[in-house]
Length: 408
Image (cartoon, rainbow, N blue to C red):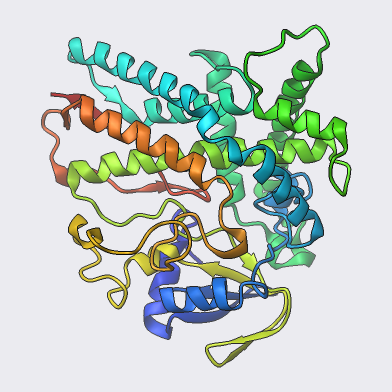
């Protein structure tokens, strides 16, 4: 029905024709598409409790260890307790991880400076992805993945995980035709990727449980989660698989969102800045119960997409939405923290991204350093019109082709 690399564009066209609330049936799955800030506020604030669960989608369910993580877990007592664990033990430590972020950004600046001296091009897409993944690895796992096979494997897993999470699965929308996923190859790709990820996580956990391991100067996130697992401090006993599910969130969401944000900003600055949310369709929600919004009855178990991309293009919300006009934010109360529904890169309501502050810290430091230290230019014979904005399939909107720049 539409290219899975840009479903937000297809759904935006539907909203322009039929309205800001569009009710569809994808196979057997009732689906609601929300494409205005006003309706997003109704869904994610006024009726937040009705719309705060997550749908059971085959690929995300598998990769998140039966939806036992924070991102894809349904709304229930388990999710509330897991969020509490992460809020207390993980996401409250943003400042503690600042030296790691500063060290990795300094390494990146040094590497680019050496290329600049030799007038060599910089593959900024690769450099920023490496920066983001290395920061996450040091914070979460306590180790760097240097150049070579380990880093290559890490990034291949990241790319394949993103592609799988955005893939169409017959079992999600046509339950009796799930066997077709074997014919399309999705089943084998999913099983292979899950096995590789599980081996990767288990190896990390085994290393941290090794009694002969040298005590690190600073605890990483795996250390913290394993200590929680041993202490039994909460209302349920944390399992190893649940720890792996949190690592999955950090690995996929933590790496990709920060890297994609920085790359897109640099890309748009070279042409002109345009609004491009990193997650054009926010992580899908599911209604817990029947409710009424905008005068329409919405059944329970309805799949809900909030089209942040369409909201960013809405002329009723933004004056001249396609223009590069940063002055629009001067004196404006609008921010990104989930209280203003015209701009919500981290979502809003109960399911707002818990790692928001960690992601913002990485993006701000890296972008400020890149823009302060270097005068970026496009390759010779390349014009602004040659810059493409094609995206790869995935939950986050990642550039399909790498961004190559020079320091002038």
